[in-house]
Length: 196
Image (cartoon, rainbow, N blue to C red; front, side):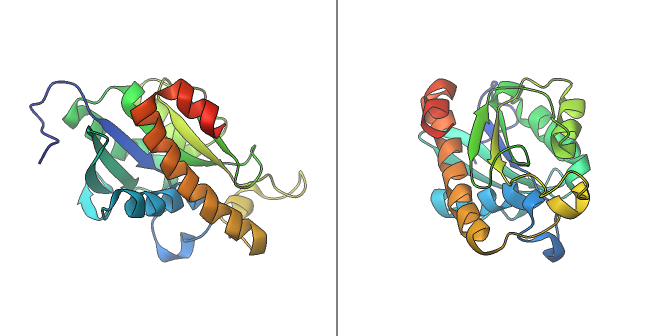
């Protein structure tokens, strides 16, 4: 096992955000989990070992040790999975990449950021609160905004993708897995130039 507790600081954690359970499969809020599914294929692993209140897998990306996580806490408590993993493996915030949905981006569009506010996203809010900083990178996957201002936000993010949007999201999930690999192996600037 290349991820050891007694190691010096190093390695990466990639957190794919979503809600556990079949009823949330394919919803906008589970765009992060969709990227996790794409990452399993890309890196040849199964994110299935229950640890730190998350399904996890370890892999190596271009020589870098990486822990992949899908928190099983429900979105608004995601930080409860991330903090103990970061503490246990001594991974600093700038090496914790969070992959999440973003309603302010058009469906299927990616945006990489090195840090920033939660922007109203409960999963990011929880991680910021638990880590005590917002200085961790994220890969945001656009899921589009509600069709009109009065639309219930919970209904929107827990709604599923239809038709063309579903196709767009499959592609975006694969791109998000590529973006994670690029961030780790090529650094933030090159990754942002490629995917933003």
